[in-house]
Image 1 (cartoon, rainbow, N blue to C red):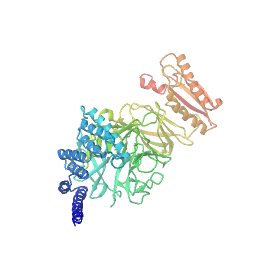
Image 2: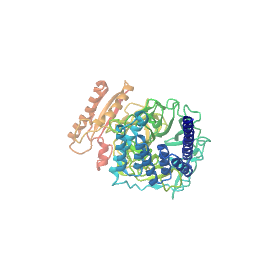
Image 3: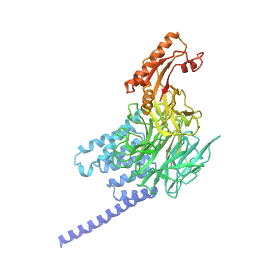
Image 4: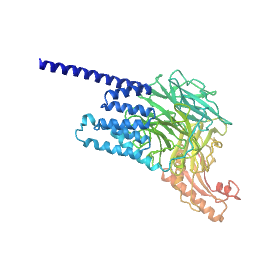
Amino acid sequence: MRYGFVFLSFFLFWGTLSAQKKKCQDLQDKAYVDFQAGMFKEALGCIRKSIKCDPNSATAWAIQAEIYEALKDSANAIKSHKSCIKTDSLYQPSYYYFAYYLFRMSRFDESLKYLMRYDSVPFMPDFNPKEDAASPSMKSKVDRLRASIEMAKAELGDLLKMEIKNMGEAINSPLNEYWPGMPINGNTFVYTRLVGNQEDFYISKLGANGWEKSRSAPGKINTIENEGTNSVYDGPKQQILYYTVCNQDGFGSCDIFFSEMVNERWGERQNLGEIVNTPQWDAQPSVSGDGNTIIFASSRPGGMGGKDLWLTKKVNGKWTKAVNLGPTINTKFDEEAPFLHYDGVTLYFASNGHPGYGQHDIFMARFNEEGQWIKPENLGKGVNTSKDDVGFYVDAMAQKAYFASAREGGFGGLDIYSIKLIDKFKPKPVNYLLGKILDKQTKKEIAANVRLVNLQTQKVIYQDSTSQFLIPVVAGNNYALHSTAKGYMLDSRNFQPTESSIDKPYIIEALLEKIKTDQVVTLNNIFFDLDKYELKPESEVELKTVIQLLNANPQMKIEISGHTDNTGSDAHNKELSANRATSVKTYLEKFGIAPLRLVAKGYGSSKPNASNDNEEGRAKNRRIEIRILNL
């Protein structure tokens, strides 16, 4: 009887204990469900009861910490984090979560202290790697957090003052607004607004008193499903909107589409095609200023991990297979929301893989002359916060940037803000060439191979077969512009823009003339040092174009004519011009043009193109021409 009573008491006690444990767990589960639903006060009530029921549950303390974080009660959030660690000091991830919260509170030294404790946990007695150790992905997050703390501490004494301003009620509302963009002329603001659970495009026009009240984008781009992340190409013939469409007639969950503007309304959407889109998530396109490059985000395989940034180019009117931007830009986490500036070399994007201040921070990277991306830089605490900061756009003149943020003080949710960038984060301001190719006799448009080359770097900036073009150019660069078509003489131009002004583009009307005997064309991109006749390296771009012309017309024989201004003696000028013409002839022969097809002659200053009374005229007179002797 005695032993029977003891066993009966044990089972009654165990049953009571199990019921109590279930009650505590149910309260904890309900608290978590309420928290996920955004019912923070209800969640707090439940989790307090759960902790009172079982004060030794580290999970309950961790949930309470998250609830207090959401309620912005930092004092109680910190207490809860400490109680969580005290309750289960061997669970390594708890130290990271607390360190990350302290970092968001700008308590950097304390955050580093808990990261050091995170490092020491595996050496504590009774540590069980299977149950207590952080995952490999968390270890990467710890590395990022440690780098972010060091970066933040370095900037602590000099926070960036960038005049961040809410765009106001013309653009923003109590709803979510994000993904800003514009055409290159800056007169239309295009962005995404979330109405209920549905994304649509909205636009605002720039009026005399600033941005006008936005309205739903006209035309056929907004549907009952989601559309977003726009990028506008404002070309010479048409305006094209590239954007993301999800779960609508695509190849994957989200695809990149485009629509053309017709009579002030966006037309039917068109899929960019399966050469760009995949069965995975492909979204957030950014089109270059010339319309021939798109950088976008994708979760397709073959990248660094997570979402990566990819690039596709338009060649002969068709988009090419996308290539990954590589490990300098992409990490094992997520890179998203790219914006390639009109200068063609400055990229802004959001990442939670590079060291940052919050969940997604905005970074800048430049493409150098060696054809490589330079290590991205965080735009700093002036732009980035502990919240998501995404969707960065910089205007063509590099005066203002625009981005979406959930920071406090807005109209509600995500708002769009403007900001003045400091010099180190500015792209190069651009102007642009707006051109048209015409037949000289008929004045009708003709398709020509148009090529713009940066003569300093020998890099092709733009190349396309077209009758009209819009090409962004950067002040301070020296450009060669060539227009060639079968059966026509080449057109050679030189541009050295000294300033950038969207209001004053370079207007070009290239009149191509059918090839005929005695036809003369000036080679505007042949360069010599003062009073010298050795060709400068920048001349090679032009000379290779002449070689292409001669190879396309194998019976053509030309005279290479050298000319000078009237500075110096006639004899010296004639000798100098002859030597310069001979240098061109020698170069062409070196690359396979038969000597019998080439005649070099120097005319000195005897055939001026302009007045020698001023420097502008003298510069025009110093030139190399080619004249067709026979065909």
